[in-house]
Image (cartoon, rainbow, N blue to C red):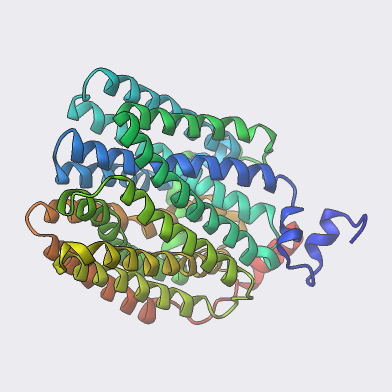
Length: 431
């Protein structure tokens, strides 16, 4: 390769390696900041669930707090996407991380003396749930802008692996901190992760020109919603992925409830279970990220959706088994859960990139991600609520949603995964 320029490298169709990916401008620092922010984000729901279960003895509160970490940002997604277009991705990602650091530090301070009032904890979690969409949508659209399309599988593998590595490190770290120092020390750890992520963005520069100030934010948000609705691929993803994500949310909230409430294990087992899922998610993402998935994304999504459903069914075996074998069943569920998640990310991320006009990336990604993720907080809230009376009922509901989501992926996702000709021309010109 020698002294070949990054631009030449980016346009060489033979260069599809991970080494070529890391030569993209700004990508290295962005990945570093993303990983730190996601570690904090992975620690946060575990810290909230353990706080609800140990300090408040309330599985419904655990589910509702998990709901609030995601759902408010989904509702605000159209406006958030328009704001990203107006003010720039990097600036708003930095604001999200800074707000996360400040609010989790406040929760740590409140928890140091005594458990904070439930209303205060819910309110702070609500704000965290709104701001997180700035980094979720901002990072993903930033990656799509930085990296040429022949490296999308690679950057999507790195993106997915960022989530998986965060789930390897975040939940065990949160569980260890909670075992050592309780809620206050755990939330302090979350604040440190968000703070370091904020600092890590100082070398990342904007890669796109913000919208003119004369463009109305509300009108821009409405145009984004209209674009997503008219795009058959994004519409199909919204229907199928959101329904499967209900199952995803049920599994995520039931694993700590079964381990801590039902089996009375140490909270560290919660972290280990999610770490197993994270390791296997990285393996799946890296392996499938090396493959040209053009035309195969639909199959990957269907298989991964079925895998998530199977992971929920394995939890039913754990809930009805003797205590001595229940923990292995749970870890078996998380193995399937992790592998499915890594494959799912590659399929969903790449399909969305190939079918989105680059002029609409920030708004379309924010809205599409919000619709796709909307099932997760619903599943977490429903799972926590049902678990208060019947673990089995919660699992059955999760499996049912997983089956429906898989069927919707088969029925609604278009087989043609190519980008419209006009959008392809724009993408090549920008490359």
